[in-house]
Length: 391
Image (cartoon, one colour):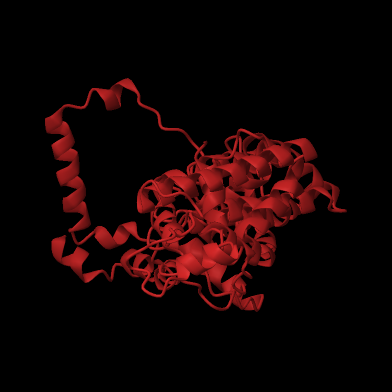
């Protein structure tokens, strides 16, 4: 099964490439403002005159990191009025953005595009952050995130705004390619959803039918059901040896001091053959609340005596991390390129580079690599004591 964060990045690229001109113009605008302390100071004055209450600062993105592009657009939209006023008060601003092949300052259509694309970027940004977590269970939320994204994409496809609807078409085609085919979903991830007390089998079957065609949905539902029973039988066999499910008690048993087995057989009453799995699936789901954090591992620990076999399954299935990709790779809009220069690094050069990186992080200049505006302003004004002493 394809890596989820890579599929998300692929879909995001479809969103951003639809109108790369708008992103380029806004990026150039932010770059101009952050080009010097004087420009940033003038920008702040305009912000005060415009009575903008937003306290964040504009940030320049890294072109190959789509999460930074999202954060840049998010901040820039807050200061749209300020950028309009800057165009009227700073002639150099308009001139510089048009030189050397520049596309010029953002126009109304560019800002409208940014506003249109922000909801898409937000849902993918939030989903990637949740799936990439390492301090909590993620296997049971993988398909939930996939279902949530698909529902929002379908809703945007039916939007009255033609710009939003057209942007969503390519996204939907990629979504259907990876997550709506009968062989595109790993059943263990759907089993993890079933083992979530808030959803169980009904939730998984509902969304399989919602996103897939009837024939495909029937295949997926049948495969999920058979896979669930198969893994249950496998774990039950490990736990109980060669005993079969629902095996009746023997007629004579030394441990059965009151003769209950003999009595049951004599009157013809059948023992309860309902398995743990059947009991679990027929019980009501735990109530879902976005305000209360649900500890699924603790629930299975507490209820392991009621469902020993399912608890054993949960212990292993829920431990599977759905993403082992580093966060910087999860948000990468570029690929890993191994050119001749990288492949020819000798062990000694690698050691030198690693040591240099450690020295830079521990040096008095390490703060200069952070996006701390106050520190940068102090440094540009010549008030950095550490730097002055070094000079």
